[in-house]
Image 1 (cartoon, rainbow, N blue to C red):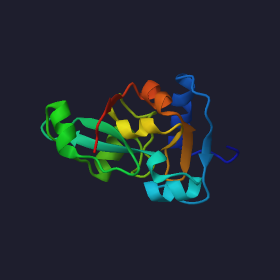
Image 2: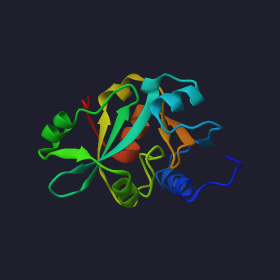
Image 3: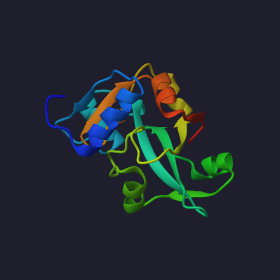
Amino acid sequence: MTQKLSESTKRVQAALKKLEFTGEIREMPESTRTAAEAARAIGCEVGQIAKSLIFKIKNTHLPVLIICSGKNRVDEVKISQLIGETIEKADAAFVLEQTGFVIGGISPVGHKQSLRTFIDEDLLSYSEIWAAAGTPRTVFKLTPMDLVKLTKGQVAECK
């Protein structure tokens, strides 16, 4: 990237470097806030977008990161059964407070804290995927195995 990076994208870049990932962050001229927008801007299938979604455990209010294929919708009941506790959607204030990222720019790495992470098994069917890099206009390309390694996420059926 040649443009000046936002603070949140710098945090993602630093996290990727610390994890010895050599991929490049790209700033797109169009919004990548939604999976459909990202796929259109990148020129890939919607399913190749690794959308990072924050949920919270209902009783403890602890955050949970679910990295889902852009073509899928998270089945909250299924994830709740997997965790053994009920999860619910997190609002924008909770997401920003817990991760340091705004909705639409949540990266799989570089959060304010370590997060329990689940990765949609459907992402493993692609040779390359794309994830947000801290803003609704920044992305980076990686493989599904890179995603598992970088996040130490548990691969699961998420839909």
